[in-house]
Amino acid sequence: VMLAGTLWGGWLHGRMTRGNGEDGLTDAGKRLERPLGEKHGNWRLLKASSFSPDVVKMLQCPAHINRTYMHQQTGEMVSVFVIVGPPGPIAAHKPEICYSSQDFELLSDRKSVTIVDRQQREHSFWQVAMEPRNVVRATQRVMYAWGTGARWSATGQPRLVHAGEPYLYKIQLSGPMSDPNDEFNPCEDFLGWFLPEIETHLVPTKTEASAASSAAP
Image 1 (cartoon, helix red, strand yellow):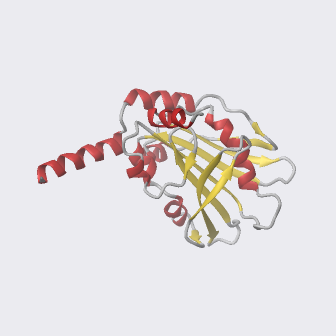
Image 2: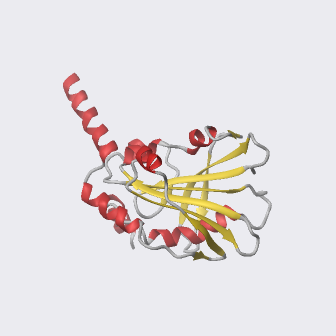
Image 3: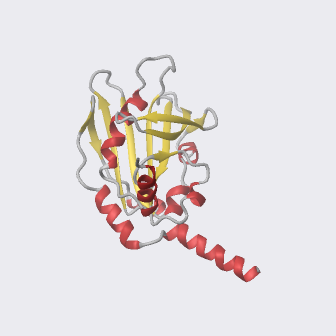
């Protein structure tokens, strides 16, 4: 029993850290880095940059996009990145930890919110509010989720849920806080436009493709 448990634990660890199929990850990486449009609704690209080699090594993401957009009417800005890699490393890093090491303080526990994109598809995202210890910087709303090529989800245990996948995507957005009573919400408006666009740069895993096929009428 102990030997079986050890072998199973080693197999699971390998699936989480390396994924299941290098070819699939390679294809997913190539698709993610294809040219992406500079305008999504009223949001226009301000800057596209690459992660440093140290960040790529830490995240173990062979491909990523990292962009900042500005709303043409309000002037508000959001930053977004999408990464792909083995499920274990991609699931391990959370903004609650990263931001706290960059002079931000967590204002409250994370909560799940529903995002409806312009194609009326629902996605769930984790949301946290971060207050800067340095008053020069603004309070940030940070939203993030994981996915396997179609819908994004605020998974409680992504390392276990996606352990059998060949690769895993993560999306993270930071933007200005807004009053819940305001008619315009920058982060949600941007995601409503951006999610259908980025989906064309994702390669659904076999699990995701099978789920979509089963859900089809």
